[in-house]
Length: 520
Image (cartoon, rainbow, N blue to C red):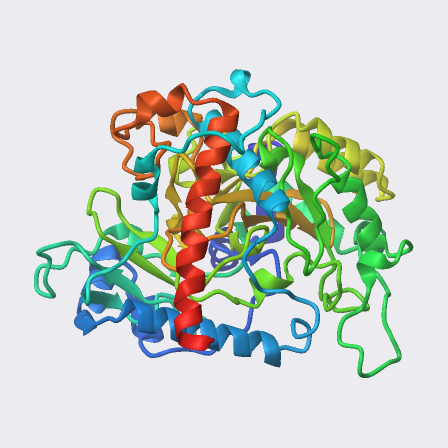
């Protein structure tokens, strides 16, 4: 790999003229095809505002108090989403939208949730095979820990659409008691540029730029020629085609999982749920490979786990009810367990972190996607028929550099997912087109059924939880700062499993009854 000095010398040769040099030094490269965009009102004014203070003034001009009916919003959103599924040629006959009713599957999901809870509590070494949980007495207080958020009937709408994209409308609300349109506080963290794609600066990440350029050579691109002559067949069966190069790589990556209790590995397909079965960090073990627009199938197949996230199926809002906690995000519809919901996107940061005098300090807001000395990915690269130079570069990148996704400047609503000691989402890596760090998609998957109004949460990690040991306000029964934290820290795996089951059943019953009253 090139050193920082060698990188700058190469740049001078590439762009000898001062103006070109400046343009190149500030150029960013998106790493995937952007999703459909139709500009919404206010986009030009917001993007032209080049400081936080200017953007704050732009946003404040549109702040207003609005009437809000939570139940009406949920029912309307449910109807719209069902209609969207029915009218979608890929989803209509392939995607099943519903909560999990099977007791065995629910128990498996809750066992994983219990394992993740114990890891969040710093009790990973105590995890053992889950014992019998059916006859465990559930404390009456558990019902108080349903995490569904019900907003007030009057809300302050800060932004009508944070994306400025008519095809992906995400409103932003403030529900802080006592706050008014005149006194509204708009933090810098809200004034970011919304994007659906990862990107990187090809100056600061010169070796990554080299890798992306080399990946465009046919021998370094992974794509299939799967297609059909039947015009009525909307979805190609790539996942069922043992000769599909994308499926072959997907299967290779899935073999790194360590399923427990005789369970099969989680599948990374377009329509089947991703149900975790292992104890350890899902992020490191669970990887997949998806077909793309470069393939003969154009990604409209059974081997594209990014299909549902890219369809923006689940309507969401950003909101805050506590100034100290900041903004969260929630959906007005059910998100079924195992659903890949959204990509966590941002700027890919790697080489610049390792340079001397690096000025990057956003690590707490970023998510690490590769680790130096990543033996798993080096092994995958080593066993793939890439060119010698490309393979060598990738192995160097995975051996020596840790890459992060930094959403500080540009990101999407995934950056607003709150921390929880009993998180309902986890993250996995999905590759597309090739195997460089720039080809990684970090996908948020629902670990359990997430019922309407429930904040979307992830576990920020043990270091974060340790710092917040006496401050965390996630509100779950397993919160390390909760009123029952001592009892929950002593709860067995089986007991935690049973508590998660009880909460899930309560939420499911409430959701089903609401639909029954209005639709059945």
